Length: 132
Image (cartoon, rainbow, N blue to C red):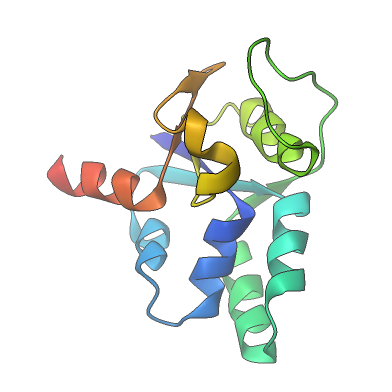
């Protein structure tokens, strides 16, 4: 069973449109979905419509939301301050994958495994799962 950690932008995308492609993550078998309260609050804040926020709340019911954790960033990894809690929570969750669409901040880390967590785009993960 894969443990997937969802970045705020993945939660946002899933809630933004009813037919968003990332909804496929919620339909997968043999996965456990994780995120953090930090990511959830960021997604919530950026959604503008009540219907979108309602979708986010409904989707979050199937996601284990973690509190912020007290960890240090692994050596050799550089991220902006606002993105540190995302990676650290994914490590704390012992996630297999951190799914993010944040090219600007996580782009240099895409495809890398950091303390057991592979950082990958949601679409890449879905393609991988559809091939197996």
